[in-house]
Length: 606
Image (tube, rainbow, N blue to C red; front, side, top):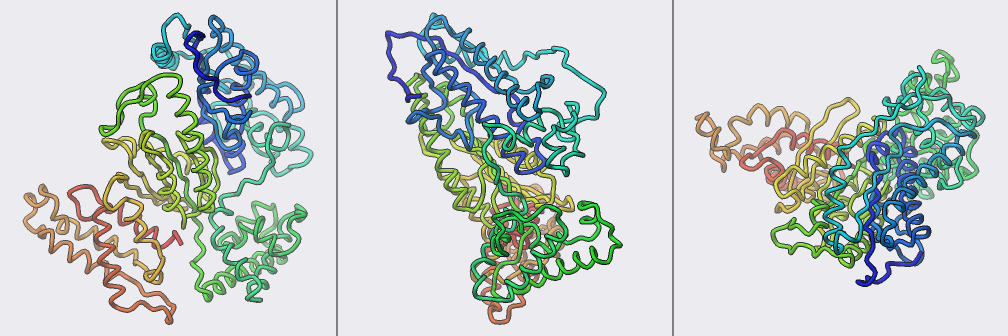
């Protein structure tokens, strides 16, 4: 495929918009990162198939997405789920309808590859919506407005065709669908999947990268691999320097192989290769839980050999943590982060409406839309580079939206770096950032991150960061902060990361209780509180009291060689108090959720 053909006013064309509906739901209904990656790639490749069909079969000029050097940009890492094309006059409805049928055929082909036979259609996936606006409506701007109106109306229409159904159990990932018997590929080679109750669409998602010719090779990092990545990188950096590290990892390797019936992979040629990959889970001492492992590997917890293996693994993982602490390596964090980002009011911008008071609205025509398409492709490439630099992985990056997983320690920097990829010629972007435990439900984490993004977009002017955490216990908190704040929200939050000269200072969780108890007296910036409660302190006095409470609850690190001096503690307390105020709602000096997030970062985002 070539790039965009130059606009020819003497060649009026029908405008066609083809959209995949239900994409977010299909992607986020994933149990593992491999499911997540496959779902994203399925959507991307369906979009690619649509573009190629329109371009090659119907001689369309593609406006969205951008084409470059004979290929669709971003096909491997994310594609817009909406394709905009211009087809020869009078061919719009036929081209759009044929493209929709082609996508259904492509999907059914993947289903047949996975199951070895055709299967009943999946109600609600894929859902292809399209509109066609004839050239007679007028020039491109008029066609675009009519297409947007038609798409908005099309969203209110639902098809109620009677789907095939049998009294099977509901799918555990998508309970709106019935489960089916596992494909032969599972029965023959992957017995640990055979007990899962999954619908047709989710079996395709699970096996797409292994059983279809289109699917890309597996290798997407797991949640425990992402959470432990910075720690394991330090283990490998010190590998030759400290024999104790090699000994501890060697014991972990032996114990993990005794648990798992699967033979070691060829890549796991030695302990170092193993800790780079499959060992990511086993470096966590908490992974060596007798009851949990007995259930997972169907072993008898009373078996002395099994119990001894688990005990030896736990002791080796704990010993490795102690060894790394002696090398002044940050503690192993069990958390990682979901990062979601979305451009604000992109639809309004493409329709030529003003979305920012300081920016001129876009002139709606084919050339400007093509320019934006190319610009979004570059943004997507820049965001992939930023996530890679942070040690994370991109699920999809379409330029106008982003979903990625990053280690906890690099999450704030990654969020800032992705913000900085947005040029002034595009609308601003809002962000959701959720820290979660690697053993927690991935689907729930994705949903919470999306909720944080929605909260960010609800702020006046949008362009905000919704940040929060959820612990393995279920405890959670969040706050929403404008990116335009001074200091920026990521800068205010970074104060609480255990780094630099303050790295060995810890904050006691008791700080939250004291601040909550004193909140009625400390929030002197709230005029309503001041009139209601005569005991509210003046703002200057309240700020001094907050600093005193923070200083009181700083805990000195156990490393005597790097023990902070008193002036460092005082400086940290002063900065922490200032930034807690920045993280609180306007007119407040302290906010309990902001304190919870600060404590979480200090304790867990190593």
